[in-house]
Length: 117
Image (cartoon, rainbow, N blue to C red; front, top):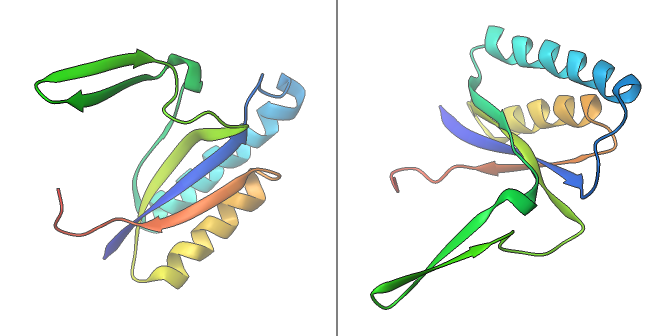
């Protein structure tokens, strides 16, 4: 089966208050269990804010190291889920379920390149 990355885009800034975030996280945990039970789970992770990022860029023999995100923007990838699915339609269905759980956040579904790592 192919692997697909479900990227979760969220706005910059503070997370929602617990009374909003807690039910979302419970629903996310339930969806993760559903993905696992279906045999589609590969792994998932949440990410720290972009301000915690470090960017490395090769420049000849040197590597330039800078603090902060690679790209400035109003949204960032706040987390992701890697799944395996027989085809794009099946991956999109998992993406739809994730989008419903994390509404109003956007989910990007992207196939992983095969044989490049």
